[in-house]
Image (tube, rainbow, N blue to C red; front, side, top):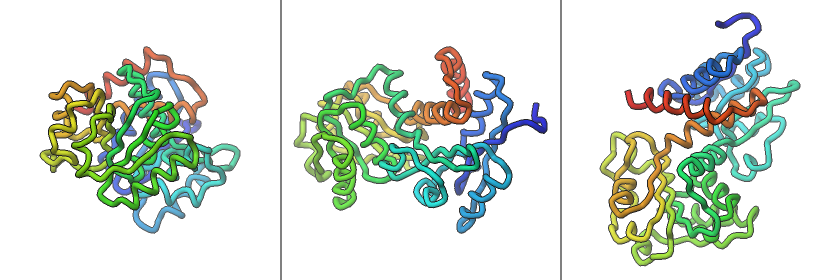
Length: 285
C-alpha cells in the first residue's frame, strides 16, 4: 500500500511502455515487504538532463536506465562504479546522500543466469557476436569470470577491434577478431554469445550465422534476445547438441542485482526462484 513514506524507484528510457521491469521490481518489493514502488518514466529525446535533475528534486531513490541513455546518463552522475566505467555504460543509479551513483548490473545478471544453468566460463574459448554496448558487458563479464580466450566477430571490424582493446585494458586474456566468413573454419570455440538484435521479433527467421558447421563444436550458446524465446541461432545450437539460454535469465537477474543495491539486502534463493517462476508466467502470457 503506497503511503507518504513509500520510496519511489523507476525506469528511464525511450520507449519504456513495453518493459517488464515494473512487474519484476514491484513483485520483489511485495515478496520482501519493502515499502517502495517502481514505475516507468518515459524520458523523451533532449529531456535526459531534466530527468536527472528530477531524481534529486523529487527524492527518487533510484532508477534503472535503458536504451538509448545507458551511455549518455554517465555525464550526469557524481560517481560511477569501476565495472560500469570500464564497460562504458550504466543501467542502475542509486540516489544516496544527495549523490547519484552509477552501476552496471547487466554483466552481473548474465553471470548469475549462467550460474543457474551450471555453466562455467573458466579457461573456455568464447565467441562474442556483435561489438555494441551489450557485447561490452558480455566481454567484460567473460574476462572477469576467467575465460581463456575471447574472440569477437562483427560486421564492422573497427568496432570489434575497439572491444578487444577494452577487454585487454582491464584483463590479461587472449583476444582476437574473427571475420564472420571465417567462423566455419574454427572448431575451437566452445561457447558463443549472440549480442545483436538479429533474430529479434518480428524478424525471427534471421540469424547472424547460417553456416551449420559452426554449431557442431559448440557446448553452450547464449542469445540475449528473449522475444522470441528461441531464436534461429539458439535452435541451430540446440539441434547440434549445445546447452542454450535466452535473455530472460539475464533480464531477471540484472533486476535482482539492482534491487539488492538499492535496498542494501541479499534476496534469498527461495524468493528468487518463486519470483522468477512468476516472471516466466507473465512473460509467456
